[in-house]
Image (cartoon, rainbow, N blue to C red; front, side, top):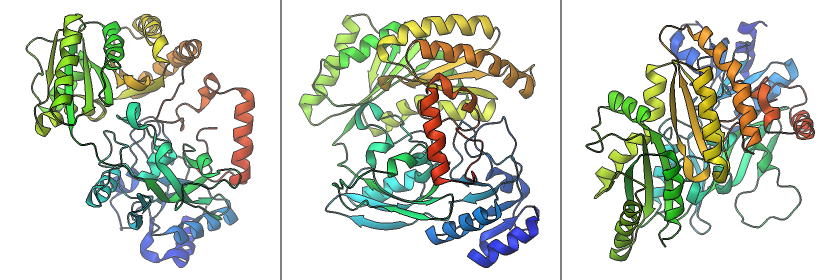
Length: 470
């Protein structure tokens, strides 16, 4: 490919300042490369052309050009993914949505916010709050992830147990397909029973069917007040018993998270936060509740009293103010950053039916102990919705290549266990590059063939995020 010609052609279509060629003096090479990768370290970026569209028309022009010239495209958002879904490793054009970060419209009657796809999730939260509303999808990467990327991976986060996945909060989308055609799925009405609701095909499609350029998201009322309970738990089986115990109290449970002592140690090292309790524990649980008045405050203490009497915990504390809420959340939300910045990590993001979780963990622990001798296992997750984040930390004596080879040998055995217990090999991170060879563990052959047919319909030349998912 003549990359200089590609830059010239694209500059004529969308403007010279929106197109950058690697090493043309416009951008530092390390920064340039960062737009073509995510938080994985398996595949290095390898591309030459980076574009910064500012609106849907720009994106449509880029994709139309790529379609006519049969050039592959990788959409780039906040690059916070862990499945290789944003990696450009074969000379693709990287389309960064970072300049598409504006509010398009707000409907105070329906309670919706229409934004461009490059808006950082935390900024969307702020825009909603300034208008007296609340956008409930939240996770550790809200400060850098883009709402378009969240939708493209059907992100879940820490409050799925109460609010559901991002799919539940998307009313409308604007999408550019693999031929440069623009779809505008109406988000200004709640009822629209006019055939297939095609927007749901793009939610979770990881940029393989189209590039999401705008979204209309539903908003809700902010929680009246929030209280966090942090617990020290001696045995994993107690965690599920605690979760069941929350059903006995009429108090909205917003989040139910857990982590191991290894995870807590890494967060303390990285963030410098203090020990939550005087005595260490093997497991920790974080619960977040919505409270409204003294009666609900009393229920919080009743929950703590109940699980203490049943000897499900060794210690526990209720946050007394918003600052303590934030401190407790740091123990959980600081895990991924603490591991990713200091170590090479092989991540597995899986989900299981809660009733099968304990049996699965028993067999999985035996498997990992046998196959990963001398490796550290960092286990944490959104246990309230059955989502486990299983991180294998690379020993110092292994190279990255040796480490990932070892991990890839063990993954099929783990996925076989997941299949046995009726789970999914990816709960929220997606398939991307890293798990596409294992899709059959969660999808049947007929399902995969149907997915390929859908891909062909929306992206007939296969130029959108090639090599991902399928």
